[in-house]
Length: 219
Ligand SMILES: Nc1nc2c(ncn2[C@@H]2O[C@H](COP(=O)(O)OP(=O)(O)O)[C@@H](O)[C@H]2O)c(=O)[nH]1
Ligand SMILES: [Mg+2]
Image (cartoon, rainbow, N blue to C red; front, side):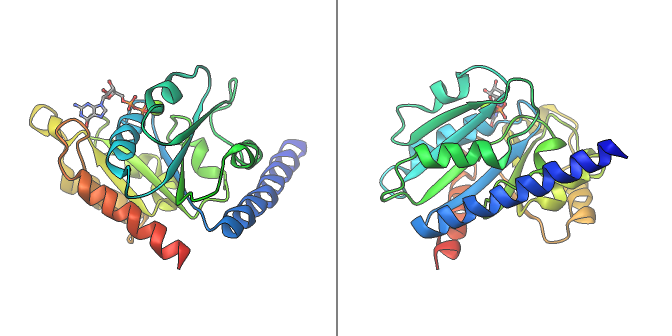
């Protein structure tokens, strides 16, 4: 009984803070995307390519969440974007309070969008509203086509599923149609964007999707 109450309070408290984040973003006319996936699906690599290619097109900032280390922030630095690293010290997800603090550290002037790289985990991150406009998730073709049905919440919450590492399709037993059908069974509206950060295949499709979401949110 006590445990249930504590979790409820935690999520309600988080939801209130997420609302504050939303107001902060709305006032600055900045879009925010919460990018989630299991560990190693290719979030940081995709963001490296994104920052490289969006230079001169959109002004971006990244908030990188990890349990420990500055490794992702280091990989993302020097690409023309503000980058902040958050360490959760054991927690498997980011919470709105941590993101709120990071947002207040960012220079919002002229900024178009903030992308949050959430902690690598297919479960917990989807439970926490961070005040983002959209959630999106990355599923790599090395993880198996059965993951949407086994970890439905993240797929249900996401506006788009980025199917990553498609350059590896010839070498792995990954049935794209089955994965898409599994994802659409839990979220019929989910958009699917197939990309390879290695070969560059359809990175334009991903960038166009992102730009479209930013424009829609900003009116
Ligand atoms: N073949 C291939 N490997 C990739 C691709 N994207 C990322 N990787 C590799 O996958 C591993 C994990 O990538 P990373 O971006 O760190 O994943 P994250 O943990 O989700 O941020 C690294 O060794 C990357 O080089 C891709 O499109 N194709
Ligand atoms: Mg990463």
